[in-house]
Length: 469
Image 1: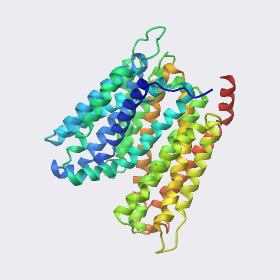
Image 2: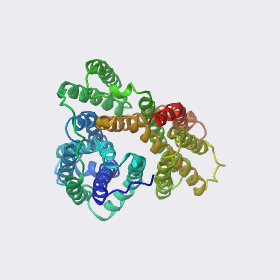
Image 3: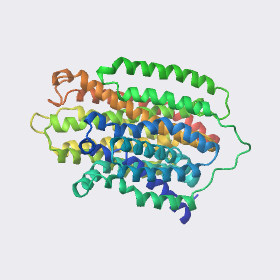
C-alpha cells in the first residue's frame, strides 16, 4: 500500500500542533538563561527567582492528567484552542509584569495554558495522521522536542544580547495567534461517543494534591534545611495517592489511567519511556560540569558540544519511524538504547590528561543522540498504539506526566549526588573539578540498561499484536 497523502488542511492542523509544542517546550528552557536577570529586575534572591521556572513545571505536572481526562470526555480541539489562548495571554502578562508576584502568577497561567494544549497533543496527532503513518507523526513530535531543547538556551542568548527580557515572552504572541487561527479552523473533533460519562471532579482534586506535593518536594529535596518537611510531603502524597487509586477502581474512565496500565505492552512502554528520560536528564545536566570544570572548555565550546546530541536525535527520528513500519518496534527501541548506552560508556572513558579533543567528545555525544532517537520514536509508537483511540487523551497525558516526573527525578538525583560528592575524589578521577559527574553517568547508564531490557521484553508481545491486527 502506498503512503496516504495528507490533505492541505491536515498539514495546517499539524503545523498548529507543532508550533504550540515548540512554544511550550521552549518556554521551559528560555527562562532558565534569564534567571539572574529576573533576580536583579525584581529584587529577589537567586533561589526565589528559580520559582519562575518551578511554577511553570509544577502547574504542568499537576494538571496534565485532569486536562487530558477532560479532553477524552468532551473535546481535544476545545482543550487545545483554549490552551493556546490562555498560554498566549499568559505570555503577554509575563512580558508586562511589574513585580515578582505578577510574574509568578503569569507563569502559572502560562503553565495552565501549556497543560491544556500539550495534554491532548498526542491525541490530536493520532486523529490527524492515519494509522499507516502515525509513527512518522510521532517522529516529527520527537524532532520538534529535540530542536526546541537544543535551541532554547541559544535562542535566549540571542534575544538577551540584542533586546530586553520581555521579548522572551513577546515572541509567543504572533506564534500563538497564528496557531490559534489554524487550529480553530482545521483541527478535527473527537470521534463520536456512544454515551456520556459523568465527570469525576474528586479525582481531579486528588490528582492535583498528589502530584503537586510529590513533585514540589522532589524538586526541593536537596534543600537540607527543609529535608524532613519534604520527606513528609512525599509520604503524604503517596498515602493520598493510594486512596486516589482505590477511588478509581471500577470507573469506566479513570483520570489516572489504571485501566491502561492493565495492558502489559503499555505498562512496559511507560517504564522504558520513564527510564529513558531519567537517563537523558541526568547525563545532560551532569555533562556541562564535566566539560566546563573537568576538561576546562569555554562556555561557547561547552554549548557547542551539547548540540550534537539533540541534532542527532532530530536527524535519525524520521528514519526510525519508517523503519518500524516494517520491523519490530520493540527490537528497534532496544537496539537504540544499546547504542545510547555505548555512547554513555564511551563518555565515561577518561582521555589522557590534558589531551581532550573537542571532536572526540562531539562524536560520542552524537552517538548518544542517535541511540536516543532510534529508541524514542518506536517506544512512543508502541505506547500510543497499545491504547484505544477513545483513551488517546489519557495515554498522551500520562506520557507527558511520566516525562515531567522523570525529568524532575533525574534532576533531583543529580542535585543529591553533587551534594554528597563534595570533592572530586568522592566521584572518582573522571573530570577532576567536576564532583559527582562519574557517579551521575554510571547511574544514567544503569537506567539506560533497564530501559533496554524492558524494551526487549516487548518483542514477542508486539509481534503477536501485529499478527492479530
